[in-house]
Image 1 (cartoon, rainbow, N blue to C red):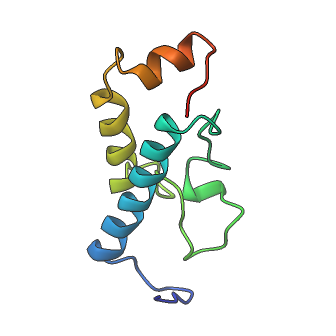
Image 2 (cartoon, one colour):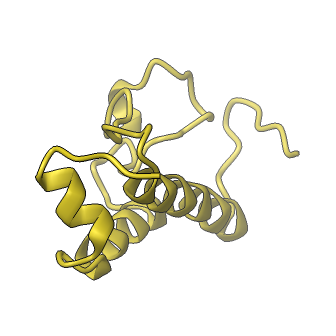
Image 3 (cartoon, rainbow, N blue to C red):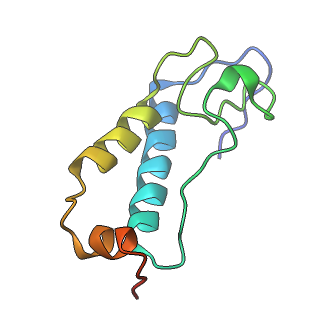
Length: 96
């Protein structure tokens, strides 16, 4: 694990890893019955409860989309609305 210090910049590899974590979490949430909501505690690093450089949100401190945003959007756009997980969730039914 890499620790950042004040003034350090995120590398492309770090942003890619962050995006992969967001992608995996959202994908799991969509298909697991015990996940009823996917939320973050914010959306931009500008107003984060995490101090810089622990920039954990899908938008940077200037509201630019990070790779995490793109991964979240791709999952949402590419999950079939007719997938049983989606149909059941919309109907208020839960599944294993």
